[in-house]
Image: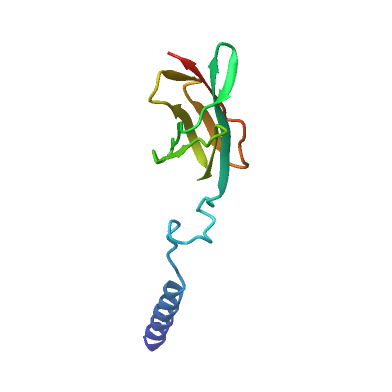
Length: 130
């Protein structure tokens, strides 16, 4: 009977030692976890032009927006004097669009961009009179 009690005590102690070695990993809080997707940043850039009478000219002060299709986060930028814009964004899937409060619409209405492994350039828009 004493041997059985001793064996039960050894098993219980061994079980406690085994449980104390278990750790819980929260993948969202542990950046070294293999379960998390690393966040990388890449750029999207392009230019916006107006097309009038077959001539192109830079479209300055145009709002260009990037909407992350995974998180619905929206970021905007204004084009400069040369009609250029640029974003630095987390990797993801984005809808890029240009907006003008004047009498122009842009072609295409939006670009869908997968920003996963590298920078994306020449995401361009052409403004035409409405």
